[in-house]
Length: 124
Image (cartoon, rainbow, N blue to C red):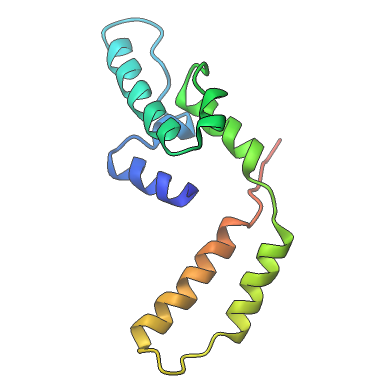
């Protein structure tokens, strides 16, 4: 889900809202445009999670705060799922699949494993 959301935001030139590179202007006419974009992205995120989770996100100030909260809360390692993905990767064979379908299947497993790779947080 994280990659899908990032892809969507990147495609709409709004990824800076979750990375923090598009900060809220302190004053001026851009503040209104920033707030509008922030609200749109907030609604996208809230509409993509369950109602129980959405309730805790509504009063956050910015998309970055929402994104960071969700990432901290839910971006945890899932040992059994990682094990299953690695097992699937090791045991998947082409069999009767076309090269394209086999490649897509393997690539999907690889990408899902990448999602579980811990992110480096430098505190230098």
